[in-house]
Length: 70
Image (cartoon, rainbow, N blue to C red; front, side, top):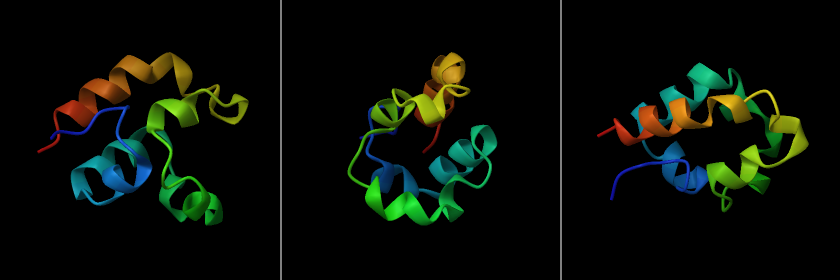
């Protein structure tokens, strides 16, 4: 199964390509100490929070890049 914004954060984090996509749009994402708390959330869910408002307009771009990962 491929990656998408409907993948859980921990699934994306298992893929070097997936991690790179998220880092492209949200630099420092993987170094955030709170990452352990959101591992079971989908990336779409994270984008629904106000703290991620600047990423929401890039939803389609992020999804397309994640789907292109192997």
